[in-house]
Image 1 (cartoon, rainbow over the protein chains, first blue to last red):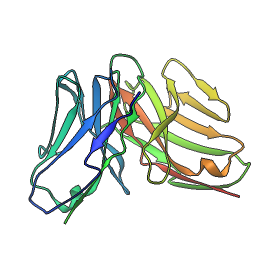
Image 2 (cartoon, rainbow over the protein chains, first blue to last red):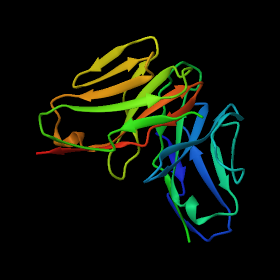
Image 3 (cartoon, rainbow over the protein chains, first blue to last red):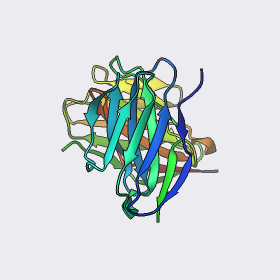
Image 4 (cartoon, rainbow over the protein chains, first blue to last red):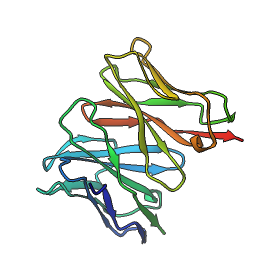
Length: 114
Length: 110
C-alpha cells in the first residue's frame, strides 16, 4: 500500500506571496490532518478534514486554510506569507472513524519564506 | 487552552540504560495518547499508543503509562540502543484533534 505523499517537497517563496501544498493520503483513509513543524514549537495542529469537511481546527490565523476533495486528497493554502511561516508542513492520514486511529505522516513540504 | 507539556527537552543516556519521557496534558476529555519517533530528516512514526481506559501498555523494550487523574503519561524505553536516538513526541488526542508536546531529543551514547 502506498504511503502518504506530499508535493512539492521543497518550496521557496517571497513574503506576501501565497502558496498551496498538496497531500495524498493512503488509499482508503478519509481523514487528513495538517501540522506545522518548527524547531522551537514542535508539531502544531492546523486543521483536520474528513469527507471533505473541516472537522477540527487549531489556533492559526485565517491566512491558513485548507480543503479536501472527494478522493480524500487535501490541499493547504497560506496567503500573504510571512517570514515566520517558514517551516516543515506535515500532513497525516488515518481512517478517521475510530477511537485512536493511527495517523500516518507524509514526508513533509519544507517551505522557506524570504 | 489545550496544551501538552513534555519533559525533558533533551536526554542523554548510556547504551543499555533506561530513558523516561514525561508528558502532562490539560484537556481532561483527551482519550488517546500516542507516542511518535522522528529520526533526523524523516517523518514521525508511531511507536506506541495508549487509550484512556488502559493504565499501562508494553511492547518489547518500550512501555507507556497513563495516570488520568493527574493527566500525566510517560514513555519508558529500557535497554536503550544507539538506534533509539531520535526526537520523541507525545500527543493528547480528543475527537481527532492531536495536540503534540514540543519533543524530546534522545541521545543514546555508545
